[in-house]
Length: 600
Image (cartoon, rainbow, N blue to C red; front, side, top):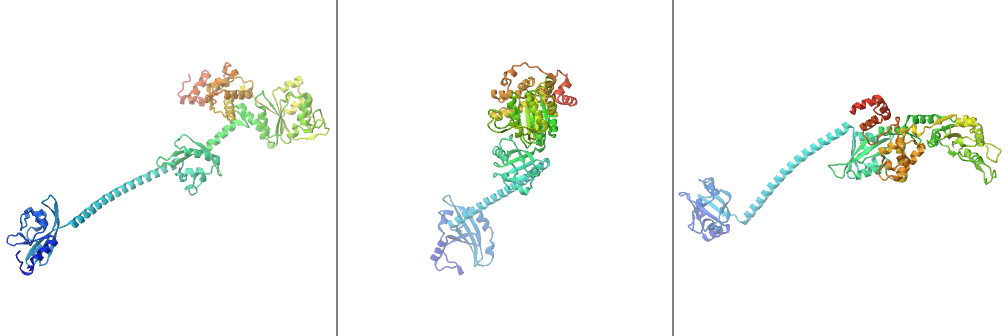
């Protein structure tokens, strides 16, 4: 190696080469005349992997990367500046002779007047650093993509939340506008929402309800909570409902249905329907159709109910007349229950078939030893009914001697026990009943006229069942419910053909016979409805004789079918058909037009 002039001269060439080897770089000097870059000192080991095995001492820019050519094009600004200035090119890659690549970096510097170029190979540390930088760049890009995805998801969720809030607000506005009473329960049964109408029905404020467990918040009877709990457990069946009573200063009857929340499994939506007016209407209708265990809403029975109310207000004797089985004792009990004596005893005595002595002892009592077998003093029914009501059934069958004693009791308000001489004061209201025509009995001499006038101050005439056939469906359904409850059988209804047979039967035994027939049918019935074959033979096999005055209701049929059936039974007589349906002629004609029925 030739020596460098000036301050570049090295007196120890081996030291210079050792420094180059240690730094693992190649040093080139730019010649001014040829503008070539000539190698100075020994080249590093990687030099021949790049330029080949030939002894190349001049840098061949033709085989170098365009990066280096662009860096060295023209006179580099560093070489035109002051001595000691340097500038790095930055790393670039070159292919090697083994099919790989190497990473190089050039440094331009000016020492004195010498324009030098240093090229060094960046080792594994740089590659590792590059890999780290690359990984960091890739991670940064991935995080940027994730951040963009998060921002996009956030934007979408905000839009969905806003849409959900709008939907919620719309649903709430709809609930409030329609006046629907709704509650929302979470998975634990706590109330998370209550509409204004729901709070109004409950008679509570939102502060007292929201966040509370429904069983604690709702003012319900304990027995009403059980069916509601069952509805919540089976909310998948929307057809099931239950009726409950809301307690408070103004009690309400409500119908409750429970639906699963389609958005949140485990949550429930409770819809509350106010049925207070409907319940009150049903109660009024039931009161009209029944009265103190008496069933019927025919005009005759409605007049009877009013007569019972009127009679109950005066403390006089009452005579109830009617055929056997018409319910005379029920009328007597109703009079007692409506009277001022309702908290005192009601005692019933059947006067038929008893001898003078037995009936006298039963009514008035006896003293010990008054007759054979009288081992103790015994009070009679008059004394037992003190302050209350004594019902004497079949009074037309009592013997003449007892009639005389009874007349004295009614006149003097005192009784004398058998075997005693001292009378005892009694305060008893007497209600008598008979299936006889007592006026005819007076004419025949079997009944005292003065006693008749004494017991017939007020009178109630009960019609036979054949004269109030419109009450048969009510009576039959009432008996069916009572008997099914007593026997444990489940029978839902009476078949229309069965009801037609019941409506056409003569009923000589009146209501008592009807109850026995329904009891017979319940025992025989094997289905969910009572069929004609289930009825007693005397009813099932009897010829059906239609009556023009009988309205045959058709349960489970639509209104048009009922109107057509009524016209058919009335043989086209629209006035009679309207009467059978229990509607006015004007209403009947209007419904014919609305139902598109041609009366011809």
